[in-house]
Image (cartoon, rainbow, N blue to C red; front, side, top):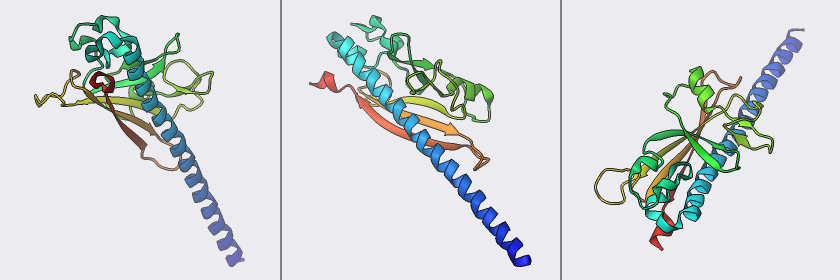
Length: 194
C-alpha cells in the first residue's frame, strides 16, 4: 500500500511540474511573438516615415506618428524621443503608431500593467489599443535610445541610429517572479546615406 501511495504521489509531482513547464514554455513562445511584432512595427514606422517624407529624410526618418511638421525643421520636438518608453498600436487608418508612456517599470504595479497591456484585435494580431483581453497577462514596452553617430558624445534623436528594445513581461502559475523576454534591433536612417 505504501509503495502504491508513493508511486501515485511521485506521478502527481511529475504531472504537476510538466504542466507548469508546458504553460511556461507556451507563454514564452507567445511572448517572443509579441516582442517580434513590436520590432516589426518599429521597422514599419521607420519605413513609412521614409516613404512619406522622402523630401527630408534627415529630419523625418524618426518622426513620431508621421508628424508632417518635421519637414525642413531639425527641431527634435517631432521626433521619437531618446530614452522613451512607448506602447505600439494601430490607429483607425491601420497604421502603426507609438504612444509615449511614462510609468516606472514594476510589473506588480497595476498602472504599469494597464499602460502596456497587450490585447488581441479582430485580425488576431497583438495590439495595445482596443482588442479583447484574451492574453491580459502580457505587457509590451518599446524602449527607444539613440547611438551617437555625429561624434558629439551626446546621443539624441538627431543621430542616425536608433536602438529599439521590445520588452514583453508576464507572470503565470509556473513562477511567482515575472518573466521577461527582450528583443533588440538597431534601426538606421539608411536611405539618407544613399
